[in-house]
Length: 136
Image 1 (cartoon, rainbow, N blue to C red):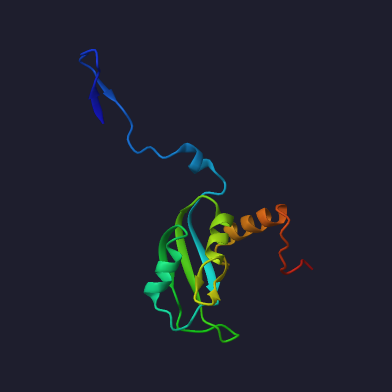
Image 2 (cartoon, rainbow, N blue to C red):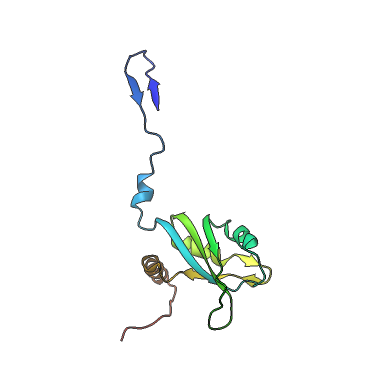
């Protein structure tokens, strides 16, 4: 953006517009996209209502429900958010989403391993217990 100086000087003053916040880029919790795996939702619920329920948590990118069920016969899906500053906080918000009597059970998708490891570290430091595979 070009502005003339107040004192009437001939040189224009140049200002930066829409410069990203340096703190948000350097923040280790900041991630461009985070995908969550979720279960425990009504199978007859349409994609429209799922989007409505999940969009209150953050900047929603997409909601996907595969046509297959997992081993226990339950339906599952994936939800992706963008510009996530705190993955743990967003995970808690997604886990509080309810559709009738069904409360969503979500976790960071496995194929996003870096985010999953970071969430595990934060939960362990916070006193949360994570059960998983132990090393041999």
